[in-house]
Length: 185
Ligand code: ATP
Ligand code: MG
Image (cartoon, rainbow, N blue to C red; front, top):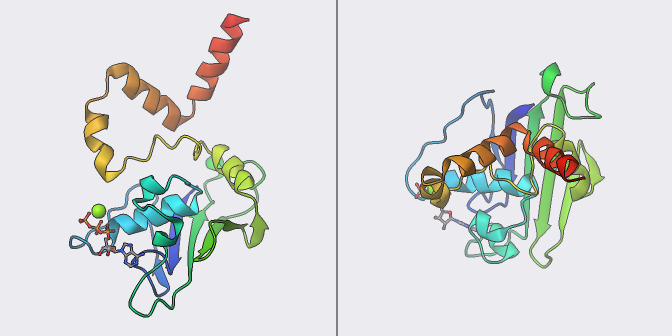
């Protein structure tokens, strides 16, 4: 499963509906001038996948995620991610028969609550987390996301810390924890 398309509306600097299409399966780079909204796209992806740490999305309040301009007439932010799910070897549990999976998260200016949909149906955050976890995307501990400010910290990691991060990304960390528990008992 990999990101195929991202749709943003009212999110940070993306007031109008913006569609980013044709993501590559292996590697994508976003280029542009300073302040043109590259990191905002990354923030939008994290937001949509259910990240709740506002600091990681570089804001203090939820409402800061909503597009702001003079008139203030944008009161909602919506981000959708459409995944290509055609790779039969890497399909989430329960989604073995579908070639596309979509997640949408929306927020309103006067509320801290989020609304999630999964394939067009209203969903809980937990259900989305569970679906992502089954393809080893752990949004509860997203160590695989290396934000602009964390690069130095990653470079300075000890070998054990690097191993921990790799284990988390490839999904074996859970087995290590289970193994340690089994040895204890
Ligand atoms: P750099 O190359 O410096 O890392 P960047 O392309 O990653 O830049 P971003 O951090 O994505 O840039 O975007 C910063 C811009 O987004 C700023 O101009 C900021 O004013 C704008 N921005 C952030 N939040 C909002 C918002 N809620 N409404 C409107 N604009 C916003
Ligand atoms: Mg940036």
